[in-house]
Image (cartoon, helix red, strand yellow):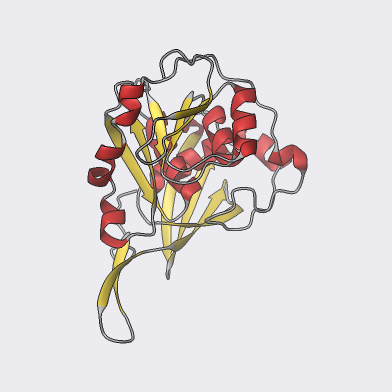
Length: 264
């Protein structure tokens, strides 16, 4: 989708306070996703990079395994909302129908609407062992963030996710009002790159188990966070052999999970 397609749904807008001052605020809109004509979920999102978001969301929900499983993707504008019509391959559609769940629209809780513990804790194959990034690469990340957080610089209130190569050079960024959405957008972008670039994923938000599952489902081995992970996120990262690293402000990286600690 062309991000300029809906001119009145820009990622940020100027809002006037009751006292007459003007400020730029992040735009938040409902995005309804239909799959092969069946309503699936309504998400609250920032209205840009929506192609990447749909791909990343369907990948991390386990609905598709490759972006080519989406045969067609069309967007429809209805008042202050967008409807995404995704047409999936039959081999994805039938398993999805079999386990279809009702999801509450969300920007914060990534497990809202899940109906069973089995769905909350999916059984996934562990990742292949992967080397940890170097301390030098990790410590170079923070200073690059401002130039990539364009929307947050203008209006604040946005989470961000970044992809960096093994040397710590950031190559792409995604921003959104939802922390899960930002990572989904980034994973959707990454999945479409030929060939898949190697490197690490960095998120500005706290790290809970949903982000761990997103990384494992998309076969990405290293997640770096600027906020502390939860105890359960660490437990699941170790179980799935995901490299999980926290970079506190002005402190050395803390490796909470990883198969090789020699490089940090």
